[in-house]
Amino acid sequence: IKLPFNHLSFQVAKLPDAQTKYFELLEFVVFSLNYVPCKELFSVSVLLKGSTSYTCSITATRTLLKLSRHDALFSDVLREVGLLEVLVNLLHKYAALLKDPATQQQTQPQNNEHGESPRSETILGPIH
Image (tube, rainbow, N blue to C red; front, side, top):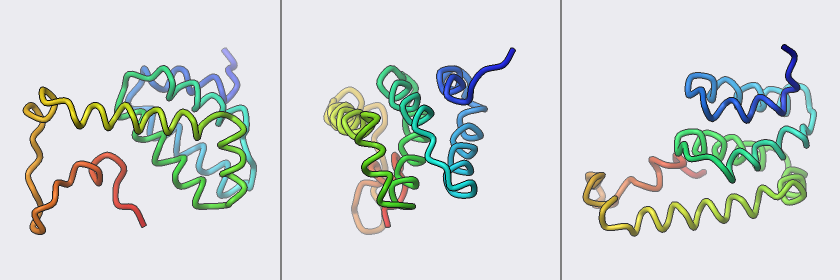
């Protein structure tokens, strides 16, 4: 069975082991081949809209952050394929999740040496 690369994103959410490899491959296409995969980025947008897997959403978001840092052109591309809107909606969803008292009791993080909660850094990693 032959599937175009952009159709793989729909299967990736179901296969946690393949998520990292898929997004690494997407990064390779952009960074090494200097190609802007618009259809694939649109597929990631659809994936993020419907994904119930937080790990997949986080991995996808990290990749998109790397792409946007790589070239200013990606800000326009991400806007065109609707990813900026999706990312804003995800931020609202995560903010609501962080505010939910039931969630906070279940996953109460330990403060770091500065007395700060590491939760945002855990989700997206350190922001440079």
